[in-house]
Image 1 (cartoon, one colour):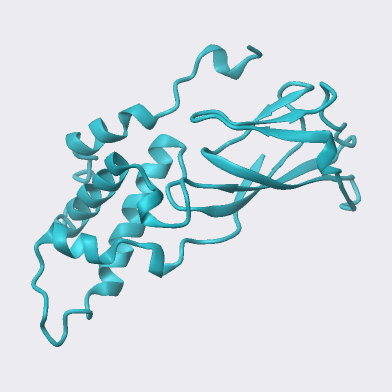
Image 2 (image 1 turned 60 degrees about the vertical axis):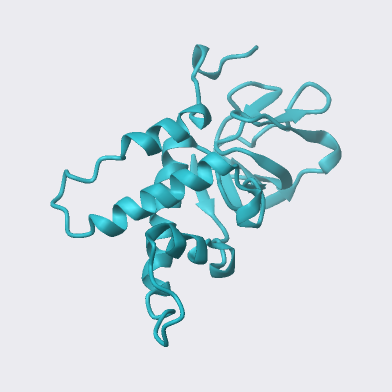
Length: 198
């Protein structure tokens, strides 16, 4: 299995101004925007860390996921949430030739923690022997910072501040702060029965 992030979050979607306010940085100076690129890097690092801990995508991105076998014949849990759209499903044979699967044969089951691809007839299309299925999907709470739940917004700002203020910390000192862990806890995936059929 391989998950590839096809797009990245544009700089304009990142809350640089909110982060400056959170850091209590001065404003109105001639060089006030000189640190923007540095602050953006800390925001991206904080977003990545929170996405890795929760399995949730905060700001909308496109992904391609490839796998060699369905977990269940008629249902395949997807590796990120929330997912707003499955844009394509392709079956790749052992020679690497793709066949696009009709959208009438599958549908997206939206879920806060474990969205899934469902076969409309009860079965997902058969993956060719020694081949792959590729699923293109859009994940994220939305394209804008305002779409992200407020507790996750706060967690990002707190963690980015932690990274910013401890940028010279020795290896092993950068543990996720307790406040951030508390804010993201409700968004972490709870594994029940290892994802087995309901």
